[in-house]
Image 1 (tube, rainbow, N blue to C red):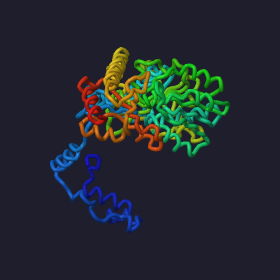
Image 2: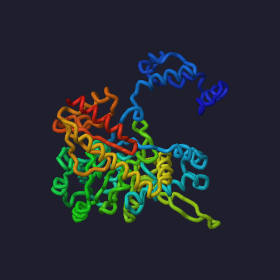
Image 3: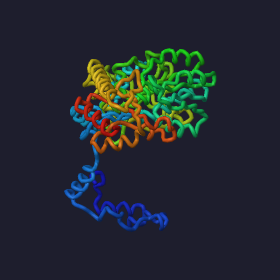
Image 4: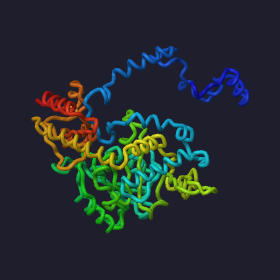
Length: 455
């Protein structure tokens, strides 16, 4: 292994230093029944580099990849084109060799991109300030709930039924250890506005509420103006948290900040980062200036050095690794640095006009897909407003349809039955996503496959 270049004498010297005679002495405390003594079945003893490459390539070739067939999967992870220049630039020494900025004087490359990243996120979300990223969108969402409790001194959070169920699951897991109470809306596919439950939210809203969490566009693809909801939430002294899973939508839609959001969180994977089997991704987190000291994570700022030159420093770091434990706002120990760098580089290459144009193309591709599917017997488009994904209702359970379409070399979308196995009313619903990578041929292949499977 390239990072463990120890020779036999090196190992013997280390063992002698700790008073051990052999490697096995390090495992004497492991119970006999738990300590493996035989090679793992199927792995073999050793292979040459060429044999390993052939074996792994054979395994990889069994997969149906996002780039090999028409691909319409979304629901929080999206296929977008990432220019080759992104991968090239993030490997430059200024970034790669100073990955963690514990010593700012030798990590100016990292600190500068963090500063630029924060500016980009703040501009996209319409907020005053953003941190240097979080693990992913789901953990950012839960941290926002904790932040709202610290600000309002209340413990009831209301989550819309349109919030991604994985985000809800993370929130439920982490709030087991806090005083927060979560009220979660029941998912539904309402014609015209699936997952839209503003009336339910308003009925639950009271002076014990710390925050209301809504996703826009929501899991079902529905797009809403949250301005009136923000007013109602603020009238009760609570905070509005807006979640997004498709950051490209912010290039076209009214920003959460313009609609009155107090905290905006979401997933930044779509910019600069591929699908990568589900990770690593990066969480985006932005808020108002007045709440900045309650924001988790860390914040990079601009300053001048002793010679008057522009420089960058860690301005605010509210985690227990940097400050006294009782004053920490979060125990999250890092940001998604490399993914945030890729985001920053890609966003810089696009520019403001490029981001807007990318969002327009995404929406146009989704509209073309919806219009074509509307002509297929057995399919009903549920949404009246969407960005680049929407919900369709089939005449049969969607989970089996997804498997059947895969046999026709089309990855059709995400079955809501898989996300909500206990909700019978959602078993025929399917969320379909289209991006700038979707071609007319892909759309036609999807429609043809549906026609065959639903006939």
